[in-house]
Image (cartoon, rainbow, N blue to C red; front, side):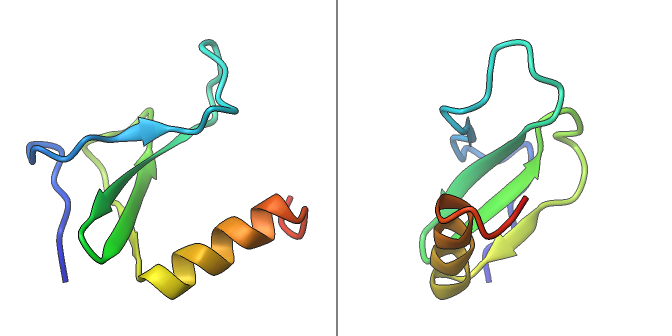
Length: 68
């Protein structure tokens, strides 16, 4: 499984819902067949890695208001 590192060449991105001044945000990057997320304030810390089905379920739950 891929292992993201802050020194790797991945392009991390924030949600379009993140304001420029927000303090609670995660960043994501695509790792081939997986997606990784990390805390945007602690980019040297740990990342969570989601397989495609898990990531799709997570995003769907967010879009449908099932997670708050």
